[in-house]
Image (tube, rainbow, N blue to C red; front, side):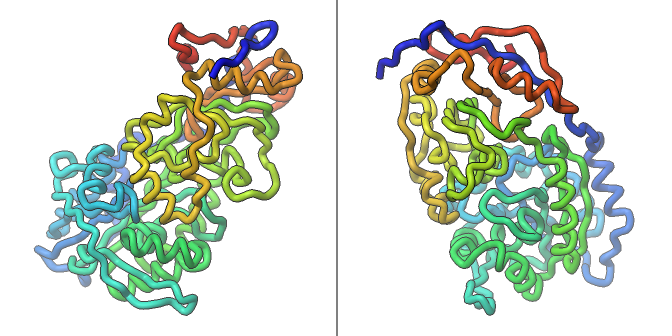
Length: 418
């Protein structure tokens, strides 16, 4: 598709830096060890018992270090830990696919000191009062104990007092595909806590490690949580996580360029908390980002391009990386079918940007921004028309040196850090 270059050329853009909370855990191993200092489950455990360590597919900061430290602590109690993938239907809902996802995050036997046991077999634990059927991984049920690890943060599908966290790791992650399908269909917000409690009644849940990340995607807090405190801790830490969630510092843009989407960035590929839930679910256009351009898919996503349907324009290089089986499996489980739709595909970054600019009445005064992804928002680029608003915001630094929006001979946009 040929689109004429905007009259007057491309707009100038400016580098913006957001000054986020940067407090972070320096030594993960020591932090986990400190949490276990007050942990005394001697009355519940016996030497030689097997513990399934449930680990998900999210790109949590230093997740390999967290799991390795946890495994070491469990071994110090005389237990025999092994890792199980707890990620619903991710990895094409196959045992090898889920094991590969963990390996991509650095969670392998060689790295964490415990075998990774992956299969998709589940056991039904019956139905909740709502009618939702609860499933749990057979490996978790067969083990003597279960220990969960997860990040607490706002969910990308629903709103409730408990969203992503330890309860979700039990109810959805450990439920494999059947559990994820059942709870998404019945409503996560209404059933996630009850489902987690049902699992805790049938499985000896030894505890969990709850992780909160700061606005720069670094570990802010690691907390060991007793099984009967999962829900309350998820509620409390969710409020903290929401206060740390990075956002784009303006509510209205004509064009938003996103360099990459991916499962390691957000469970939804790109976070609706950042770009607006209306793009997937309808409702008020808050924030209101008019044309959304998506340029690429991360390699860590293994072809799962869930969220691509929230965009308006994508590039050929993103489209060529889509594994539709992996994407559709995830989309069907989530129930958000729009997330898997394929937007209009342009041959290059330049072609996509030029098409968007061609729809502007005044391209020179376009309100445009470019971000790396919806997780890393400390640096972004904006057009001149956005600057007056940003100069009034505390914690936002404007580099007043303009740069002309530019592309290389292949139509690739200039390096984000350039």
